[in-house]
Every structure is written in structure tokens, then in C-alpha cells.
Length: 279
Image: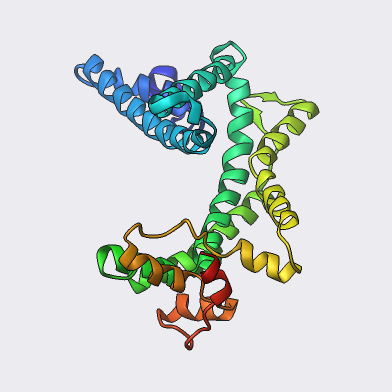
């Protein structure tokens, strides 16, 4: 391709959408039976896109299903169709002539900030609020073994540090978006930051709203908020009471840190009998 165009190899294609939609497509034309390779390549790209779409759709549908009881036994199918139709309408602007510019703006701000921030919060919520001990208890009940020690260390310590470093590096190396030689105006940068924040802001707002609704002191509210729901657990009545007793155990942050590091309980913890009675 570089020889045909008459430019150095590094200047043939730039990063971004040009690699998949232009670079690879053009490179496949130099192979034997190019049409076969093109079909295989774009089929693979379609499968990857469908995989990502299914994950996002099921997350939204699972949330909306609680409001769709009146839709009957086919509520899941109706919700899937509705969510896909709405997202189709929302994505139509990306198919216009200005679509690449809008896509570049969204792609510039959404993955480096909100996705990384949500990933960091998920790691902290699972391994430090829910706790590695509760994860191990659930795994042992289901598959009769705990997490491997290296996996627990990676999930509790290594992953949060790496994700936090990635987030900080993204902030330090931030540059305004560009699409080729086009530089976005100031209002477009404001829109980009709004896109980055709109998926993250509901998380702290929901926490504040939940805390405001709960009775008691701030410490009691936080303990209640970070305690697993009584509705969560095995359906088998023989194991449910034991699980609820274990899940309502009072542990300090130091207790969780010790277990995440060693895989052992720091010392026999007190049982939160009041919460267990409520369950």
C-alpha cells in the first residue's frame, strides 16, 4: 500500500477508524481471493460488535424489566426490541456525513474516562465493600473451591492500582480531540466532557440518595448500604440461613484487607444479629 501510494509505511494509515474501515479493507485487496477474506474479516467484526451489543443491551433490559411487569410473559423480548430500536435511532446520526466527527468526539471522551472510572468502582465494590471473603464463600458453595490466591491478589490489589494509574495517565496526557486536521471548537469539548460525566455522575448521586433515605447516623447508613441485600443468596433453604448469617457479618476495612491478602479470616467476627433477624 505504501509503494502504491508513494508514502512511507508509517504514513499509510492513521490510528482510529481508518485502521479497520480503510487500512484493513485495502490490505485485504492485495491477498489472493480478496472477496473471501473481506467477507471473513467483516463477519468477524460484526460478531465482535454483536457481542458488545448483547452485553450492553442485557444490562439495560435487566434494569428496565422491573418496570415492565404489565407487558406479560414476553416482557423480556419486548424490552430487547424497544432498547434496540431506541439505540438504533440514537446511532443514526453517526451514519451521516458528519458521523465520523461525532463518533470521534464520543470515542475520545467515553472510553478513557467513564469506562475506566466505572471499572475502578466495580473492582472496589466487589473486593472491598462486598469483600473477597464473601466472594470466596459464594464460590465455595457453588463450585466447592475458593478463588486462587493469585486471582484474589490481582483483583483486590493489582487491578485497582493498574486501573487507577491508567485513569491518572489519561488525565495527565489529555489532549483536545482532533479528526485528521480538523480541530473541534470549544463547545464540542464541553459536549465531550458532558458525555464523559453523564454515565458516571448517576453513581455518586444514587449513593447520596440512598444514604438520605436510610435512618440512623452516617456510619450506620453506610454500614447498611454496603451490606448485601437479604434477597441475595442461594434459594436452597438448607444453605440460605447459613449464607445470610455469613453475609451479615460485621467486618472492618482492615479485616477485608487481611483476607484479600492472605485468604484467611483475621479473627472470628461478630455476627450482625439485628440484620439477620430482619432477613
